[in-house]
Image 1 (cartoon, rainbow, N blue to C red):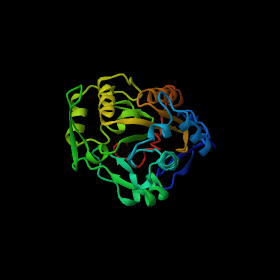
Image 2 (tube, rainbow, N blue to C red):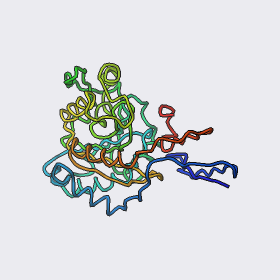
Image 3 (cartoon, rainbow, N blue to C red):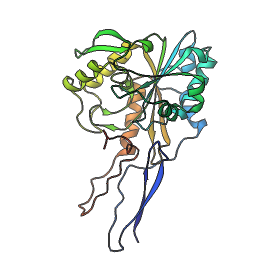
Image 4 (cartoon, rainbow, N blue to C red):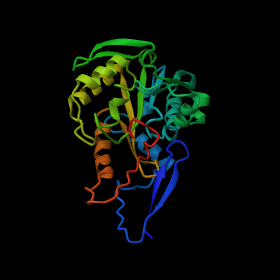
Length: 291
C-alpha cells in the first residue's frame, strides 16, 4: 500500500502525519530537497565565520546596547536555536544581558502573546533578556522617505540601540522573491502606513522564488542600513523545521549567499499530471495568510 509521511502543527507539536493510498494508485512525493540539521557546534562555527563583515564579537566591541530582531510565530524560524549563541557572543564582547533587547518583528501582525513569544525565543531567553513585540501603531520614529518614496516610520526603541542584529528564515516569498535579509526591518519593524504603502506602491518580485534585485528589495536594504542593521543571521530549514543552513554577516552579502543555497534546496520539479493533489502547508500550516 503506497504511503507518505508529511509534517503538521508547526509550533504546536511539529508532528508527523502518515497518509496511505490504495494499492492501484501511483503516488509521487514532490517537495524540496531534505538536508540534515546543523548541530549547535556547526551553528556556532558558521556564526564565527560571517560573510562580508567581521565577526559579531568584534562588531560588538565598545557598543552599549544591542537589539536582536526575530520574526514572529507566523514564520518558521527556530530563533531559540540561535539566540543563546548570539547572546553569548555579545556578553563576551562586554555587553550585559540587561543592555540587550530582543524585538519580535511582526510587521502589522497583532503582537504575539507571552506564550507565543516563549515558543519563538525559548524559555531561557524569555526569562533573562527583555523581549519586546513590535507594535506598528506604537512609538515610532520618523526616518524621512526611502529611495522609492515611502514615508519611513520605524520602531523608536529599536533605533536607540547602537548594535542591531536581524534573525530570520530564507524561503520563497510572493512579494520579495525570498524572505530574510533586510526584510526583518522593512516591513518587520515599521509602522502600519509604511508597510501599507510598500505593498501598494513599490514594485516587487510578485513571484515566489523570484528576483531579489527589485525596487522593493533595494528599498528594504536602504532602510535597514539607515536604521543601522549591521549583522544578519538567516537560515534554511529542512523538512523537520530544523536549521540545515546558516548564513551570517552583512545584510546584503550574507542574504544573497543564503538565497543561492535556498534556490538549490527548495527547487521542485514541475509535477506530473495528477487526478488528486495533496498540498502540504507545513511549516506554514499555522498561518491563515499563507494558507
